[in-house]
Image 1: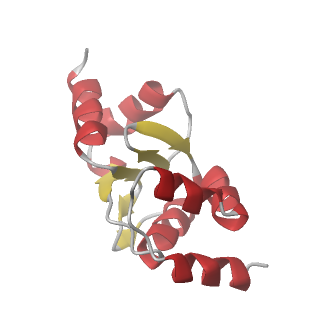
Image 2 (image 1 turned 135 degrees about the horizontal axis):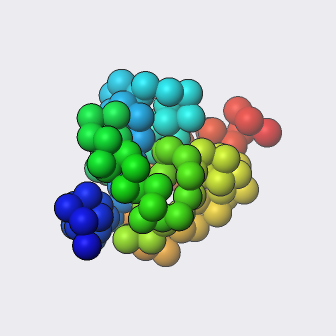
Image 3 (image 1 turned 90 degrees about the vertical axis):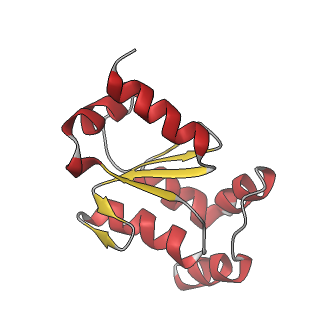
Length: 120
């Protein structure tokens, strides 16, 4: 196992929710990362943000690890959930709420409902 792979595995094992993204949760560096981080931030999810722009090995390694070609990538309880389009769809359908609830991840349900109202 490469150094990047073991680092990725360690990160998603030690944190309930992890977002591999371009930039950070407080300063996203691309629109797709900004959208997913914005949803998680608004829902008050406690998550680890991993800036793939800071480490080329992690940037390439996460794509291989998940067999998913794009960033951002969201993991919940060690499982790959998806990228921006999937997270957006799950948010709007309520599936993201269910995923967090089933995995005992605290989130602001009212905030989730407001996102859906604004995009309905």
